[in-house]
Length: 573
Image (cartoon, rainbow, N blue to C red):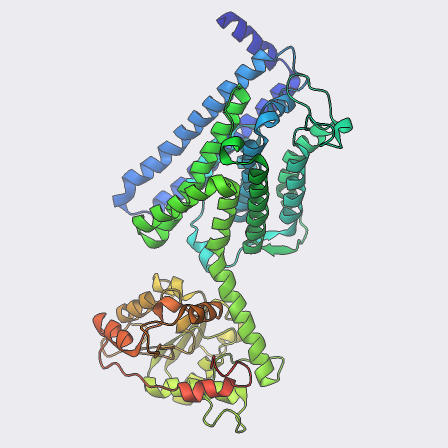
């Protein structure tokens, strides 16, 4: 038996198509291993010495798992190939037919997962994603992505900046989904399947459309097309990845649910695995599902350092997988990771649109709620009201000559920087904002500096050093911060003794301890971080608990919200 297997395997390897197939696969594997070690080395350099053991585990375990996955899956594939050496017209096509004929529902979950993974890998590092995808398509997706997921760039960057993918990924994803629909096996009942005449006869692997090879090969080709196009120096329309993942997750989950309904139950949908190829592809699907859960757990743990929360996220995701598919879980997860920054920029865009309407000008440098000294109707224009609010904040901060000031969330133009500098003869002022416009004119005054970055980056120690500033301001934006408490703690650590922090913020003053659910929804839609919408007492107690003293609260809501009665409903104002 051993001689027969060896001779059969050697005979198969003489096929030029098999030789090319394996050569491309081996080259892809080599590149993946090379990229993996490059990324792990880069991560190791940035780690503390205490994490050396963790680095060694990351360096050793993923390659071993990759070898294990490819060995198991390809053991079954080679055994299938040897057994059908003289009966198969195409090993590649017949292997898929063998799986799809009885396990279309479950096996296409791997195909849709690959469809999502193409966008995921390309979004992180488009030029280096090709070897991983070739390894996955020709070898095993699980064996490929077990090398990529642990070494991929930090997901925290995706939560801070909007990410985009070229439009070609959206187009090819649609084409790939059509291909998946077309590789469905033909129904036995001709009265049900009107296209039965277009189906090939069953030659031991089931009956499929005569164009099965076209759709199967097309599926693998269209998923690689975007990466090939990326090497061509042409400008492409960019799609927000939040929207792309959201649509993919919705489409795949609905399609998965419809198949469940058609099959009658989960038990009827997941049938017993009998052949080698069926076992191989389902092992790969299981590995991809576990890798998805690992990515969710790892990202949650690195983002919150809360293992309980991470396990909760994994448990919910694992329970959802049989109902909506691993691909949909991955898509929705990636969408939710990118949703906060997408929502934040959408809110900022809406604020700029409303500010333009309020001012009646196409270009405007201010964007805050304003301080309307009268009822809001008495001749004060929007720009003057915005300036008034800035001056009100400066007055409470007691700005004066010799002060060095950090202005957080200074806006795209940074009008408040110029105002504070000229009005109060500041020694220096720096403005931080993700959207601030920095050009040559930004350096006309050496004592005014603009830094393009997020508050989250600043709280992690970027941009500034301790005691650079003696006063920190946040004009009409702190209620948008996802981590307001962390911001205030960082202010304490950065200021010298006697330093000051002045902010305009929202306080909850209702009869209940927190806003009702409907108001939380409205405030969240407007970009307000509801979990840190504190009462006055809660605010004071927190500030004093972290080291602030002489905390003062001044209520200016009457002068602020009165100017918006013509824009928002009176009950909301």
